Image 1 (cartoon, rainbow, N blue to C red):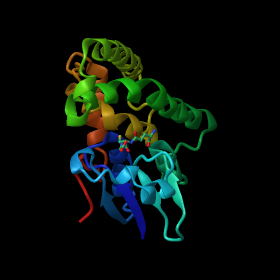
Image 2: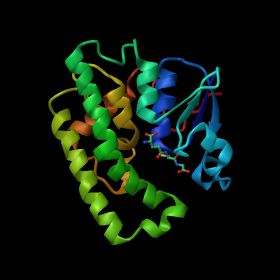
Image 3: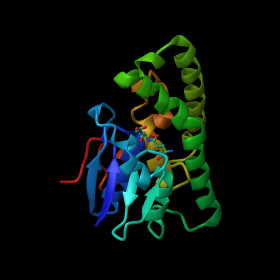
Image 4: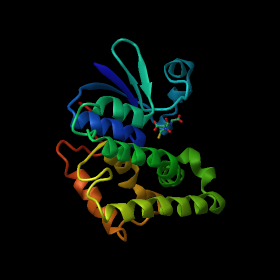
Length: 206
Ligand SMILES: N[C@@H](CCC(=O)N[C@@H](CS)C(=O)NCC(=O)O)C(=O)O
């Protein structure tokens, strides 16, 4: 069985838990939390597994590792209904996954994390939170414009791009972002949550 090192409260980790649940892939879960106090990700033992010192991280049965949430999604989703076969549709799925890491995560998720985690209290200044609000709103507006035209990010079907962007969009209000005023995103969030075998962020394997 694979082992997943993941942070229960983190969207990047949730992406992987959600996909594994939807694909019914069993996994052993090792939880790593910011406020756990053990700083496990900073330990030499963990950094030997993942030099970036971040989760999520998958450990395969043969001792190999895979990090970066979206790479993990693509690895497990390959050959399933969650990766489109058509070349251009697949490229559009990649487009949204790169957008997630380049435009969305660093603003929407970062602002929510600054407001949520105790060890980020010093990052709650107007100089930091202001620009994050602006860039996060821009990212959400890009999604909103697109999702008013199409049911899922890569087109007509749910793909791992939807998983990648659902993780931090569904909790964006924690970062002070307005979702109710964005009807395209709100309807898409409901469509994603209604997918078979969908699990919430809090879900962990038994
Ligand atoms: N680009 C990475 C980001 C991973 C990341 O930032 N993980 C955070 C949680 S969201 C983490 O491991 N934090 C623990 C730490 O920095 O000690 C991905 O998508 O997997």
